[in-house]
Amino acid sequence: MLTKRVIPCLDVRNGRVTKGVKFKNNVDLGDPVEMAVAYSDGGADELVFYDITASAERRPIDIGMVEAVAKAIRIPFAVGGGISSVEDMERVILAGAEKISVNSLAVRNPEIIAEGAKAFGAQCIVLGMDPVKSDKTASGYEITTRGFREFTGMDAVEWAKRAVDLGAGEIVVNSVDADGTREGFELDITRLIAEAVDVPVVASGGAGKPEHLVTVFHEAKADAAIVAGMIHSGDYTISEIKAAMHAAGVPTRMSW
Amino acid sequence: MTAIIDYKAGNLTSVKLAFAALGVETVVTSDPEVIAAADRVVFPGVGAAKSAMENLRALGLVDAVKSAAATKPFLGICLGMQILFDHSEEDGGVDCLGIIPGHVRRFPSVPGFKVPEIGWNGVTGNVERVTGNGERVTGNGERVTGNGEWGTGTKEFYFVHSYYAEVVPETAGVTEYAGVKFTAMVKKGRLWACQFHPEKSGRIGLELLKEWLSC
Image 1: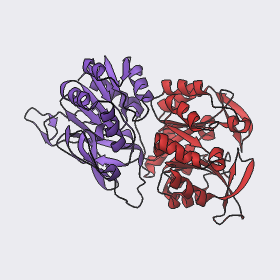
Image 2 (image 1 turned 60 degrees about the vertical axis):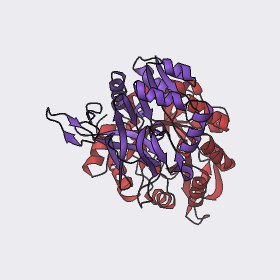
Image 3 (image 1 turned 135 degrees about the horizontal axis):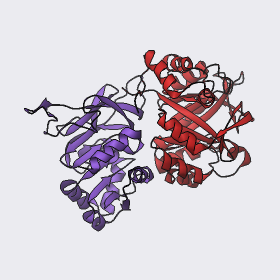
Image 4 (image 1 turned 30 degrees about the vertical axis):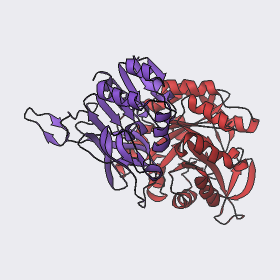
């Protein structure tokens, strides 16, 4: 049976992994390669790296870090942030990343999704989105960009459908409202997107306890879930998360 | 020397890095002579069957691939497994290499099953019968050991695909998705091929590569 993926997220700033609440108050957590190895050895099904300052500072992604991670781990990983062209995507893929996540860039230039999917296959192109609750859009969720700094007026569900039509192979739904709270995923927006598209949906933002993953898989139809603070802090291990999922009947990879 | 065939069907970095992690040097090549001279040949691939077949023809690699698959340790991965079969229904239908008899089909549209299948799915040994001396074998008589782990149980490997190969006598490992039981791995002597990505399947993937390196 296809298992539900648990994906640690590493936000990288100036070559170090950091974690903040709602993109603020960032704290240094460690070296990205060392953390990637530790999580891979600890049972992570996949990893995602966001160069969180790249997009805001409009500078390219750190390819050396991508190469070092690719050398060190044997599980898939995605890279996002600081990508502004198909050439940037190619550099990240040739460095050994499995997937590229585009977010603000795709809002500015949706065709980049189609160009990336044509060049590397839809499975390589992940659309990251940062929806926030809003009364300005039909679904009740509006897309924000550039690290929640800008509101776009775009409806989250419509954007997801359009991105899949363009060729996105997967969608990461990162709830602005839940991000960093560790009080649980935002189930409504996760389910809305999961029901609206026929590609895998990754829930993101708000994971604080293993039960939160069980809930998002049982109730919000997510195919994968991102964890960050709850494991970076040492409060939980991936094994503990997976044991809770397994006990609750969520299919998960239990040996690695 | 282990050759990785480059026929413009996806990124080869991960495959190269996985062998490097096992201390095995590889040569990425599109040269039929290098392939002919290699001790072992890896045939990866990501993307669409039709363009993969067109690229193989344009690069003059069809005979080199067929000859390598017949004569030396050969490992197909993902699309590199699918196009070993007779035919794929991708892109309206395309004749493939015909090294393994059988067909490649698109996953049916089933509620609750996203296509492509992306992620870790269990692989189980496809045991057709047990021989007199207790060996568990496939329909074509190959020993089902997998990497020594899924030969006797189910182990997860990393998959990314929208098309699947049907189960045939050469099928050594099977997986289920969208209500379909499909070929996760084939074995025909020293020709091994897998739908999943051993190079992205953690320790268990590396063990499978290690086992292939000693076949």
